[in-house]
Length: 262
Image (tube, rainbow, N blue to C red; front, side, top):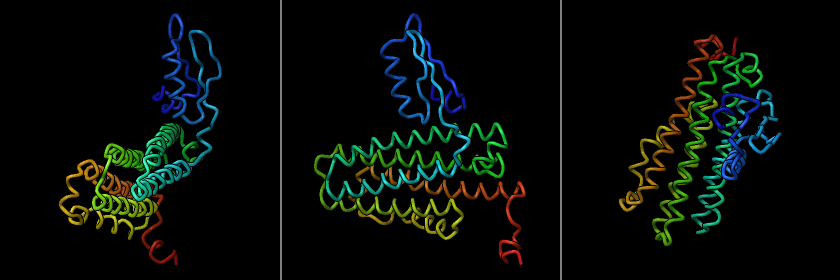
């Protein structure tokens, strides 16, 4: 069902003989919570008719990505707060928020399929050319996986009943570093070269910055390093976007960029 949604189908029919079981109905309804604009419009004993009621072509790709950015930002920010307060309820809400992030990622997948299928649709979504969906897709995937990394850290915090105060401070410091890295990655995708350089510095210095006891918290180390790798991938997506713009003749000439067109 999710694959059909991302493939751009407006109507999806779910059937089961001789009738749809309660288990299948529950699975469909849970899946619908993660698919923006897809609703049950007709229901019989042996079928469910689902229809998209949102025109994804009327929403820019960057709007969708900005919403994903905001969710990742709030997940990091609230994880820092949870570490400071030792509040497991905040962590639980962050894990739930990852479902919202997935929801926008699936919607982005639907938009990308539609943009690839029609140049006019791509233009409506704010793209100058269809091929430019590729770096946007990479960016969206990075954001979705960043959310997964934060959830992994959150699950670790929930599983540990008593984290020593010294280690708690180190984890908080790591999360603050991830927050800065994330901000740099977001700016870098918008063409900020200095942000990309700063992010590269964060990446190379990460494993030299913390005491030995920190490295025993394997989940935090692996999740944080994965998050930073994804941030670097975002910079690479921006480089790919610029390269495609040059290749397609959509980028201003070097002289125009450097002199303001004078």
